[in-house]
Amino acid sequence: THDMSRNLSISSERAKTTLHLLILINILIFAYRDTLRPQLNLHRTYRIQDGNFKSMLLSIFYHMDPTHLFLNMIALHRYGSELFVHTSSRKWQSFHVIVISYLVC
Image (tube, rainbow, N blue to C red; front, side, top):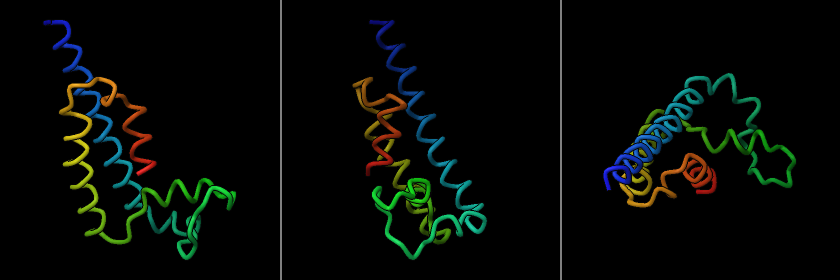
């Protein structure tokens, strides 16, 4: 049981690191939003069929103002920690599961 507990702790730390990485990416994109704005075409709604996957992907991380960013990152940390870090299932603590969940939701 000691090995199982240690593996769960490692998975939990990996999940926490993944959440912090997503928060950092959001903050960096916010910091460089004026540089990215022309690539985003914010007046459009993005769909995969538009053919501009890069714009659709960047718009997932784009926040309009500091309050929007702050509230979303608080929610990501709070609910992401509940769902991914403090779970007893290592499957939910996977880097890939966390990133895919973020991109889909």
